[in-house]
Image (cartoon, rainbow, N blue to C red; front, side):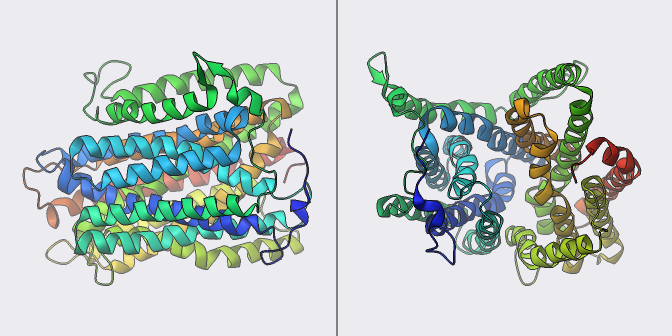
Length: 510
């Protein structure tokens, strides 16, 4: 147990602990590297890594989905190792080093280097992402009124990084070459590491973020300390993940239980079965009052998985659509990935004020309604994009305004759902299993990428020509967006219709 310090009373950064300044910039630059790379990833796979394949879109969709699933699943493992052994500081620094290494390896034009780079980023993200957010919370004592605004400042850093990175990395990638864009992402991660390291050197974190039990970390196993083993195994896990990601070709004949799945798909399917089985066991073993709230927690996790599955198409199918079928004048296809973060920055405060205003008049919707409206708005955003086909020119190119409207609407949907979801999981879950439910919540993003992969494969354009676009791809994308809109709107309406029941099951939780 770490000692309490006077850190909570530090007001060196606009009334907040000075450590927030260093974590803000560390996260901003880490997200810069992550989203800068993501903006280029699908385009790079389609145009370079799988260029020789007629099934390049299918292969890119499989790798993108597997990579995204592993990125989010790794946070569960990295968070557990941090809680048990490393502590926040060591975990964040190790994760940052691995991610920076991955981005720089990605700047090497070689297929083996490509998959190895993704492996390093997956493992690094697992150590970095869950721990830096938790570290922010540790800067404040319980019930510190500054905590919520501190997280608001911190999450603004995430969105600034997500907004600027695709613009800069996309520009370098299209103007000078892919690997300049990837290289800039690597320098972004390195900058974030330098900020974090300088914060540790300056002592702004007090005694926060240290290993929970230093003696356990220094224990010898086969003559080597546990600390060293963790670092060695972290580096060795990257090549293993690279092998898994490179198995993008389907396994099975489509008639078996696993169907046409790759290794990562199969792993997530098996893990999913165990999670569902354990959830049924938990529902059976808890009290009736706990069961009601837990059912709602499971439902909102499913709703969030569905929303992220549609939302994360922005880095794959929607980017390819922008590249092939959108008249882009002020930005290229990779740079369109900045639009979501831009709208989040613009809309976050107005929507927050809207909830405050509605709450004042006691008409602030309960969580199930917000989730239903969020899915409904996501469906409308894809319906708008599907309507763009009617405005296409003779070359199958649609106006940029339709893509802009999609990102505007889906960003509103995100702000309806994402900010409240995490806190409601902690409120609705029995205390003795809240850590497990938080793990399930984080894994929901991993399973969302399985949905992304499924949709990406359905909308894959097969062609022996690397110059895909125009009328050849327009029909496939427009039909796909129309179908997605129907599923999302249908899901949103279903959630709204069942909201009264879910509200009743929630009891005193708003």
